[in-house]
Image (cartoon, rainbow, N blue to C red; front, side):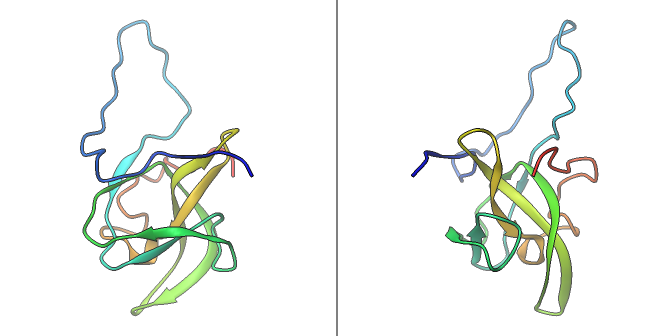
Length: 120
């Protein structure tokens, strides 16, 4: 079984980027703090058939790395196919996905349109 790397947690209350004049722009998406309005399952892939890796508690800011389109989820009168990655597996594959249906904010839970995961 491989090592899991997770970039999420309430301890990450401040997210920033240090950049100087010699730092080139990156194609990597920016991250943003996301927050669920109810307990939501964290899954390995952007589908409800994927393994459950844990849960995200409501009202606890967590780092959202990027978003992907996956399985459409319908719940609480909301329909959305966007899933937000909160971590990655060893080797860099994005994982630890939560459905944006359960996130506060817009359809991407506060991540920008350009914050699509580069590799999924």
